[in-house]
Amino acid sequence: MIPAYNEESGIRHCLVAAIEQTVPADEIIVVDNRSTDGTRAAVEAMQAAFPDANIRLVTQDAEQGITPTRNAGFNAATSDVIGRIDADSALQPDWVEQVQLAFATGDFVAASGPVEYYDMPMRTFGHHADDTVRKIQVKLAGKYVFLFGTNMAITREAWLAVRDEVCDDRDDLMHEDLDLAVHLALKGLKVGYVSAMVVGMSARRLDSSPRDYLYYVERFERTYAAHGIRDPRLLAPMAVLLSIYPALHVGRRLQERRTAQSWGGRPKPASEG
Image (cartoon, rainbow, N blue to C red; front, side, top):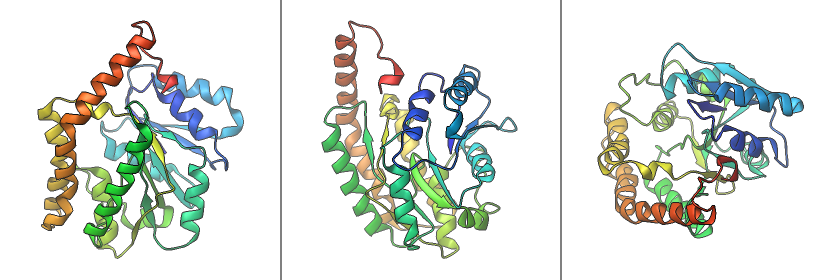
């Protein structure tokens, strides 16, 4: 399931990666949330180009926001296990297969995996570093293991168990994926972490100003506080994200400069990821 708002430039790349899997997905759901660009047309073109991929386009116009859009996608899904990524995600070719293998164990009802930033230098190193940090976070989290919306999956049964209790967050203060994980934990449902579930994603978050990036990072604290959870160990991701922002922000600028030079100053097409 892919929530989308004005993702015309990258949605094709995302869908191609979702289609070209070692084990095909039962369905690929794009939830359009009031897009004003060509997102819907791009998805419809992919539907026509790949009629056997079962790409479904769902419209969520009732509210603007990631939480109601995610909810609409989860509610529309028909599979026993629902994958959730973002419109700038690029699944590794075996992602669906790895999700199936992981959930077949019955060890958990939801899980996330690591990411690889496809528009940053030293991608392989970054992937391993991301995986290592997330494993440490899992150990610190206790029963409140995180979910990461860019790369996660949840059983339909677990979603139905919490969908009427997750926060609507109309003030846009929290991490909606973390809120979902908290509600699963409060139900006694286990969230896992699977290193083999690898997704490529854009580092465009690093384009944010320091002020906006800080607001984004502080969503961790606001999410836990909204549920009366005050364990300082759960705020470790905040410290990590704030400490690496300066270096990664510079790295992002350098990568963009190299890309522009390699394309003769022309923007690199989104499909080239």
